[in-house]
Amino acid sequence: MPKTAAKRPDDDPGSGTPPTRGAEIRSLSNFLCFAVYSANLAFGRAYKPVLDPLGLTYTQYIALVALAQEDNQTVSTLGEKLFLESNTLTPILKKLESLGFLERRRDPADERQVRMRLTLAGRQLLESDPGLAVAEAADLGEELGELQQAVAALRDKLLRVGKAAR
Image (cartoon, rainbow, N blue to C red; front, side):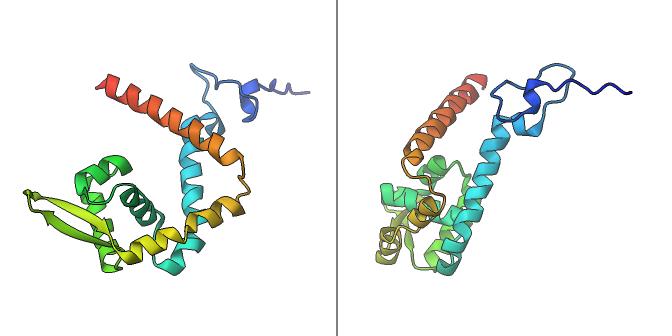
C-alpha cells in the first residue's frame, strides 16, 4: 500500500500557518499578496454592474472619488494618491472629461501643470454613492471599517519597506 503524504499545516489556506520556506513550493492560497491582488480584481468585478450603466470603469470611479477629496489637484498629485503613472492616468482623466465629470485646465502659475476639478455632474454622480450598493451586496456591514483599516495598515507598512529598499 503506498504511503500518503502527511498533510502539512500550510496546505490549508485557513490554518494561519505561514507557508513553508526553502525547497518546498508554497501554495498560491498562502500568499497574502495574492489574496490582496485577487480581492482587488474581485472589487473590479463587483463594481462592474454598478458602474457600467454610468459608462465608468472602477479606476475611473476611484479617480473621481480621489478628486472629490481634494478638488483642483494636479495630475501628478492625483497620480501619487492612486499609485498611477501620468501616462496611465492621463487617458483616464481625458475620458472622465469627455463624459463631463471633470474639467482639466493648465495651472496659470505653472503652465506645465494640469489641474482638475469635478463638474456638477461629477459631484452628483459621487453623491449618488454607487459604491454603497457594492458594500451592501457584499454584506460587509460593520466588518467593512475593520477590513479597510487592516488593509490600509498593511499598505502603509509595505510602502515603508519599499522606500527603505531603495
